[in-house]
Amino acid sequence: MLLQRIQSFSRRQDHDAEISAWEDAGKAPGAAASLFQYGRRIEINGSWTIYHVFTGIPAEIDGWTMVGLNRSHAKRALDILNTRHV
Image 1 (cartoon, helix red, strand yellow):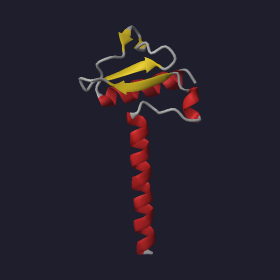
Image 2 (cartoon, helix red, strand yellow; image 1 turned 180 degrees about the horizontal axis):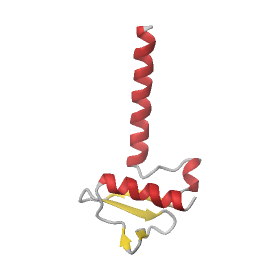
Image 3 (tube, one colour; image 1 turned 90 degrees about the vertical axis):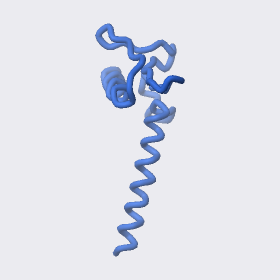
Image 4 (cartoon, one colour; image 1 turned 120 degrees about the horizontal axis):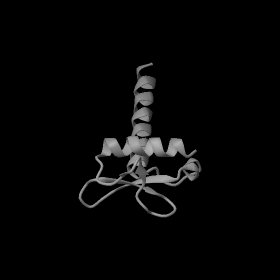
């Protein structure tokens, strides 16, 4: 029983690490990602940009250009934009 719980915890940690890497990559390409119109990239200065994946142009929400964001704001904006356009 203890061994099963440890293995389950380890698999969950591996899964969480994979999801984190996927999010850090701006929701990397894959079957589900083809539905997304926006991606996220980290800039050389450590800030994040949300961009349209087909044009590369930074996204806008209500006149606010999605550049210079911290990681948390970038994730939230990306989720909003991709949910709005699915």
